[in-house]
Image (tube, rainbow, N blue to C red; front, side, top):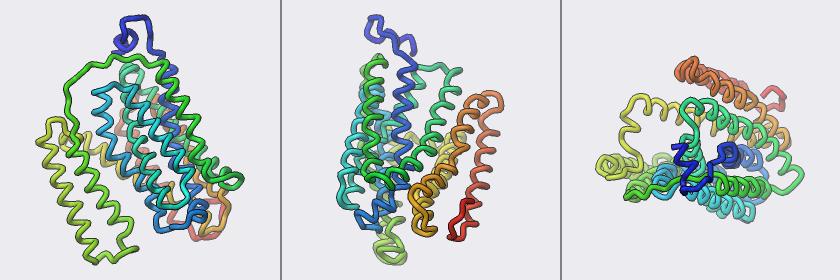
Length: 365
């Protein structure tokens, strides 16, 4: 694959792997920092735009469309090549970032976060695929450590930057700061990745994508507004739950019949893949819950400043880049299972400490 990439057009136009890696890391940094930097700014955004009832949807709308479009972008990358799909995703993400900074109501902010998520769905999976194309199997462990460290570094920089921006500038810049980073990623990818595009006759599972989106959307609406806007025992709750279950069942049936399923059944029937997906789901739930609500707790309950909230969230993630870097280097030596178990145990232990919070300002959070 690498040789093909280096001679994709029949001329001497080699793929410059360091620059491609830089483009991938910039895009991943942009997507990763968005979660933590927005979390710290949310109390100020809500105070400015009102609409606290839509607080959760600022995160949910982004994650919902990102999750649903990931498998669709994977198919598009097989059809049209990694570079154009990756650049399209980054471009849509930047458009969403620009619009988010211009939002004047919480409703518009949620809508523009939806646009952001539509672009974000292409960044992570296509970036990982590009790395798999240009690096050998022996090199990918080390490179994966670099990519994982991007998330750790962003989790440290993001909260601190968000707190400083909100305290000394306008909250819109938590979105607009993505623009130069994303543009640099697109330029580097355009100049230094040269890939062959094999024309294949493939079909897109649009029906499966729509069913997955519909069922997860109904579930999100139920979880976000249930018990708040309506009772858990109201007809609306039962209708949404029934709709989500029925459409999800139809989706699972359809995926067994589709020619090019958006989510192949073996992803959930293979024990190793199913266990990895479950671990990723539970880990994401823990990390997203803490990242989204801890800054609000620090500012709203403890009464501390946005900068203090940013430092609190950043301190939580100091070990992330270190563990990612060393994990990538030692993965082949000790195996994935011991490292995954160790990480899970530490995550649970660290999260349990938050049960000790009592609402009083304290540096030991």
